[in-house]
Length: 510
Length: 116
Image (cartoon, rainbow over all chains, first blue to last red; front, side, top):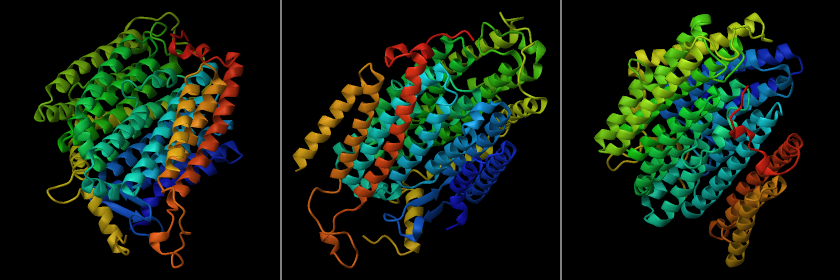
């Protein structure tokens, strides 16, 4: 047991409250310090789990089914670190770009509370706490989507709020039914109970409900229509944070529940998962190709990439999950980088629209270079990170003889490249757009401008580094994936670790 | 007792779904809260609908105890849905001001091409 384990929840929580301070300067310093501290905590967490150790802490020192478990396995550590990096960089970007009015209405506290929800979701080993974490995250995101009160934001906000509330309702009903069936809500305990429970009908219903509940949050086909309707409406910093992280939490929860807790039912659902994965990839990318607004185009890409992540679930082997985790790292970094770069271009040129933009390569070669790296990484051109992610995923698919999935994965990659080339041609390559003359009057000061460009550049540098040296992350993904699968007669590493931690403080007394 | 609960939950879910599918924003919000009521009742049934002893260790035998957990879960869920309903009402009010009415079909501009 380590006190460090609670830090990723406490630090952003304290940051959130301190960012409510009255003076603007103090508020901002508190927020920046908090996000830095959060990053340090996540790095330490990663350092202590890098060799495959699983940290477990029982809340209130009660053993497993009675106390809530907080668990940091390599998968959680990866997600925590990604969240912290994102929160730090997008936080800097937001500090530079968010207007005074939004800031006055508690933008930064909301940002911090969103991080609380995310970190809590990645840490908790308890199904109902996962629901609470989702609610914290959703509540902050509801306000962040609608903050500013422009008409588009309110319209998009209503769709976003409605569909997410329905998803939460399904989730909480599924959690209640799980408790009725298994008599526990601890994820590790559930995994043990469901491996003994031999009623395929009940587990199938539960797996289906979790698939729908998390599927809405992850924006899988056919439950994604809320995403392109709402994600492009708030300021670009918010879009970057949501597009990069929020849908991925749904996928994370699916991995936890469907692979760790309900593997038998997931195997039955495999044909359905394959179809959903294929349609999510194709519909997402086709939607992207048709768009003329950079933010909407990238929002559709979020859906398409979710299809790839779902592919790991559809293949269902440890190898595929490992590839999926690597893909998650890659896509969170690359997608956020692309959103941030489009924010930088908007800052220079004053538009997000492909027809209105043009000639950015000539006027801002730096921005063009950043976009070039991130776009090729997303499309999967070697030596960038997307290439390794897709290589691992497609190799896992071939090993499991899922040739249809693999074929679609290849085809969608090409379409992704096509849509990235479309942005490149329109925004960067063509001589001039309808409205672009490079003379966009911006309210930002020089330092703010530098900060936003710096944040985007660091994000791109991370994407580039992941492409040049993917080996440590691949190894880490392998370890993270292996912990979710039972080996031989033993339970999975995750379950074993939680049971062992409970045995240390009095054991599993029923 | 169980049948009564089952029917009530079913009716609540049906009404909630019906209202969510209506075109009016107000009905949508009422529908959403009906759905959460149904979900809360559903969790309530997971604790067994029988009269049992107070769950105090040392006073009641473990076999005779009522399960306190579902009520704790519902309490959490009620608090959350209370906050969320308050937020949706505020959001609905602002949206109806911005759009000029509570017709959900008028709220489609974000799905259309914007030239900004």
